Amino acid sequence: MRPLTDSTDIQDNGLKLRERAEADGYVLVRGLLPRSRLEEIADEIARPMADAGWIEPGKPLASAKPDLSKFCVEPQPPFMEVFYRQLSLRSLHALKLHGNLMGFFGRLFGEEAFCPPHFVMRLAFPCRDEYATPAHQDYTHFEGSRRNWAAWIPFTDIDEARGGLAVAAGSHKGGVLDMRPALGAGQMVIDADLDACDWRWSPMQVGDVLIHNCQTIHKGLPNSSGAMRVSMDCRYQPLSEPVGEKYLGVSHQMRSWEDLYAGWEDGDPLKYYWRGLPLTVQPFEYRWYDRRDERAIEMGEAGDPEALLALENISLKHRSAAVRRRADAALSRLRAAAG
Image 1 (spheres, rainbow, N blue to C red):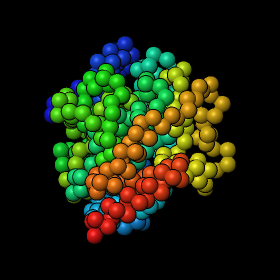
Image 2 (spheres, rainbow, N blue to C red):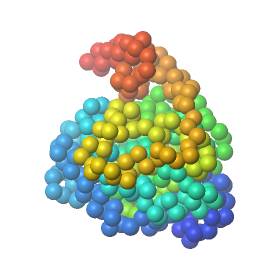
Image 3 (cartoon, one colour):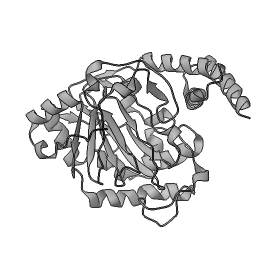
Image 4 (cartoon, one colour):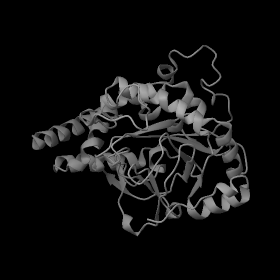
């Protein structure tokens, strides 16, 4: 795997940023965010994890030992409880709107940037390689503008053992690809020859940010470090572009903004900051989700364990009661086969 191209030296040059982003589908900027602030936020992030027994209490997030018996993944309830406690932290909402990020994306787009409210925490237990986030494209999860870019922000230093994020350079040029159900976050993997991709990865420090287009194929690498890997995904696009409606909701749609804002001060300017902006909202069409869900049920009925997490997701959240029942039946069959 080749190293990422470092774009730190051109971060203030909008034209060069756009040229590189259009060519590679990603941009790496080192030290874009202040390390000291991210370390403070990491302490806040660690508390729900410690309360749930995932990691040692009172230890820095980067070095706290995990309890592997507590392993869980989205959308399982123990995972989602920690996940939503973290999404309630005001500091994370403020971080995605940090002036360094908004200024960078304004230069990248050459126009006013918009940061949709939706963001995600990535919480990777070590030694569970089969649950590493599979190779996928973000567009299938959100739709909307294809000029939407993700910022991947790690809260621990990333070395070879911790894994981190790998991107396939130039893969954004191939359009939206078909996928099939898989284990790991998002429960989708690109159904194509992934070995043919030009995969890139480099070590990263806290404060570095890896930015990629919504059509760029990317994946989480296995975490063999003996500690948790914790990162955040937030999204940006030109304000003038249509925004997918899912970007305006809470991740996984299992809580509301009112739930996350509970305990915040009345009148906090971060609450609903996107309301009143001149947004063109594009309805979610479920085109790729319906394809994934049908394949997951077929795989579950055939006894394929790769469908497990997708079926759990369908069972919890699908908009159709009939599809939820089919997923429940396939889940029962899988679990019975596993003993």
